[in-house]
Every structure is written in C-alpha cells, then in structure tokens.
Image (cartoon, rainbow, N blue to C red):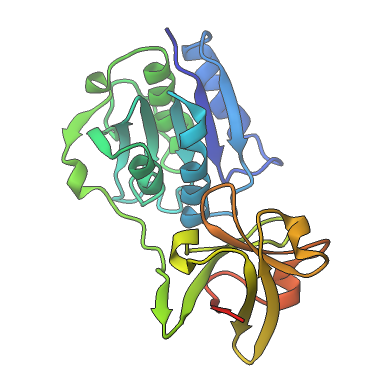
Length: 262
C-alpha cells in the first residue's frame, strides 16, 4: 500500500517550483496522495523548516516527508533519504530533517541519494527538488525499499541542527525566541517543564523592559494581555490576547527573554 507524501519547501507560491515537483510525483507514482504542508518557509531558513517538520510528524502517521529547504543545492552537501519510525524523510543533509527524525524515534537507516538510480536525468545543479528529492520520495511512497534509493551511510554522521537552549538564571528561565508565527506569537526554545509551576503571574523581561503576563492554556487566558502557554508543538509560547506579542515585546528570532514568577 502506498504511503502518503507530505511536501514542505521554501519555494513559495509565485513560481512553478513546488508544482513541478508535484507533477514529477504524479507521473512516477500516480497512486500516491500528496499533501502540501507549506511552501511558505522563509527562503533558505533551514531551522524554520526543521521546526515545522518536527511539529508535523507526530500527527501525520506513517508517511514520506519530502522536505526542500536547500540553500546549499549543488554544493558538496549530501542528499539523503532516511527511515525513522514507520516513515521516511527525504531532503538535504543540512539539519532540516534532524528534529523530525528524533521525534520519530531516531534514524533506523540512512542512504546518500545524490547518485540514486531513481533520480531524473539530467540533474539540474540548482533544482534537486525536481530531479532528485521528488523522484526518490515518490518511489519510496509507492513502496520501493530504501536500499534501492542510494548508498547506505552511518546515521550518526548526519548533520545536526544547532538550536539555542534555555537555561536557568537564578530563579528565572532564560529562553530564546525560535520564531514568531504569523499571528505574532513568540515560539520559544523552552518547554513547559523548563519553566515549571502552574498557573500564576509571570514577569517576561527583554533587554531594558519587563512585562506582566499570566500562565495559561489558551490565548483568551491572557484577558487582553500577555499569556505564556504551551504551543501545539509542545514548546512554550508567548501570545498577546487580541494582538501581537512580537510587536508588544519588540522581540524576534534569537532574542533572549527572561521568564520569572511575579
């Protein structure tokens, strides 16, 4: 039975790049259902793509994840296909697949696919999504084994994603903004257990300013103010009920925030 194919990229929606990759999958494996996770990852933002994949795999079930955020396309970076859990991950070996593979229980088997017999010829140096990743993903989704996709490689030598890490600073938690979502919510590198405690008042401090917040489960718990909550991905988030926490705190990617019981 064919696996669903879930497609993520930074190709955007104005050019034909994502659609061409879908057309390749449709030609090679017409029985495979393709879902577009997003093509709105900021151009070249490997970390944002990796976080989106990590959030997806726990709820997607067995699938082939085709992920293309590849600023190093055509360079000496490796192209890989990975077996993790009951799923496969296909994309560049630049850290994009790392978090998702870990969430699936770790990589069971890995293959280097740059010279795969399943690729399209000729391979364009700047469009591996079309000529390499999409064909390999299509064949895996159709039931071909990973062994035919490429040469085996040691999973321990795959590129890891370098993320900031939260740390305790006295009685407070120093966390970092991984990204602001489109609603202005700030998604942090910390998880609820890092902050500890339950409901109550929290002080959120940036460089030069402190803001009152509450610990809550929903945006509405902020009652028009800031709320620190558990995001759907399992990380801590900061939202402004009815507004943008990003604008309110004047905080963005990699900024440090100090969270402390008020």
